[in-house]
Image 1 (spheres, rainbow, N blue to C red):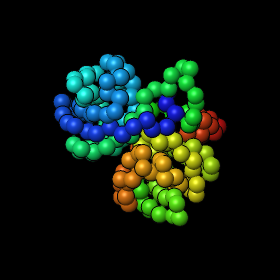
Image 2 (image 1 turned 90 degrees about the horizontal axis):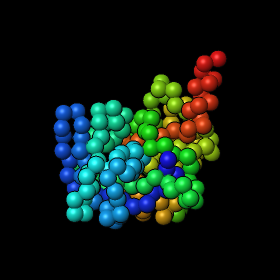
Image 3 (image 1 turned 135 degrees about the vertical axis):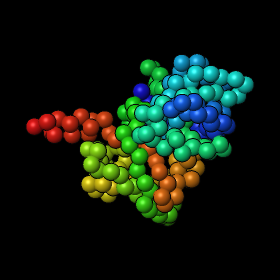
Length: 195
């Protein structure tokens, strides 16, 4: 389980295709602390560390993951938001984040406000996902509060710290991002649709 509080940015060092899989090689500030089999969220996608050499570690994304996320569009030198799993004795600073991306969304507007930023995202509502005003949503692994919730879009406001310490500074209009919708909202929606 994750909290949506990004620890650091990782740099994509190499990409390697093998059959339908994509091997992603990254470096980051805590590579030396990683272990094989450890779960690590990349732009909100929980992936398993399968190899570590020097200051570079390797994770593998399979077709299911590539079909539902923006990882297949990564390029060498791109930066990804990274978060290690929450320790059992850790402080719960963010929201409940599973690292299971539901779908992607497209940034349709980016506004610079007086000391903050507002980003608006549009998503395919036919997949059954929803947002609620002041509820939580995870974008590229960053846990945020929803504003302007609509049937197929929503906005989030970003403080300067989050802007500088995540890849939000690289999100522009037309950028594709990973979305994990609130787990409680997903369960409620499924139960209501069964009635």
